[in-house]
Length: 120
Ligand code: SF4
Image (cartoon, rainbow, N blue to C red):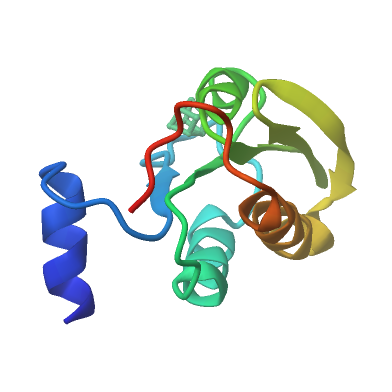
């Protein structure tokens, strides 16, 4: 069921729940990207509202994608930047990145939709 929804979402045929974006990682990656991305996806899969959630591995190219998402992180050495709708919210220690991103995503999802935001 979950895989079916992910396929429909990736084809933009249905909208429901978060859309996860993570970088493919490379030599610049400065955090446990796969671990953080898996934890965030596991903890947010039940969100009913469509929001984009980005987990990026470095401060070189990560902030661009993280800014484009509704919420995102860009990893740095021992820490990361937390973004919400294009703005830096704060620096977060690496060990708290997943918690911070999940918390921000849930906060955003609990707010009333913006005008023009499509509902699922
Ligand atoms: S965001 Fe950074 S770590 Fe991830 S693939 Fe791009 S350059 Fe590499």
